[in-house]
Image (cartoon, rainbow, N blue to C red; front, side, top):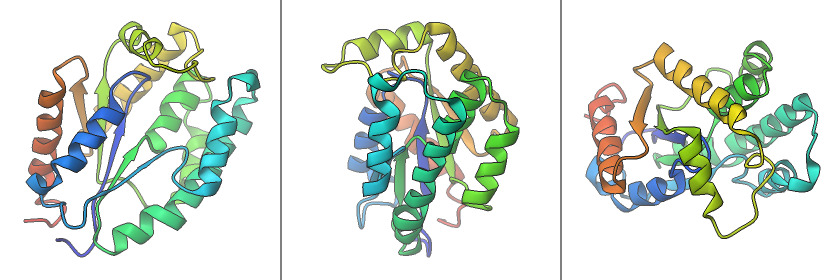
Length: 217
């Protein structure tokens, strides 16, 4: 095991299958040298008691019309706590961390989807994270129509983000793909309509291909 664990994020629009894939990656973590101890599985916003409280506020469908800047600040408040209390401490022990969404979601949802642009998000990223970034960001990519169709099949009411129109998610998807295109060494884009086992295998192969750069072999 490396002296520091590796930080892998799965991201993408609603319905992309992040939860399913994260569980599969933890189950198969021994295949890429992260099985002892098992990787920590966490999510954003959330992961800590404060983060989960802020998540409830952010997803509450009764809070439609939230100011975009307030939304962004709440997300970064949760992220600051998440990094400090959970992500960094586990990485420093050598444990891998898998996260459902991270800062790319802010660039995609608030930056592209809300039309806020990148400047304010980059400023908050510097304040909250400094130079800290994921080792790998996996973007599970699919058309918004398919993503929302999947989301509607869930056995719960739609949250505040899931109620957004298709045009919002088209902009979000473009935001994700633009970031991946700008830094292909740190991103892996996978067709989220592929079979689940195939997606998992592609992520594992992507980790293996990058393992030398992370000092794992």
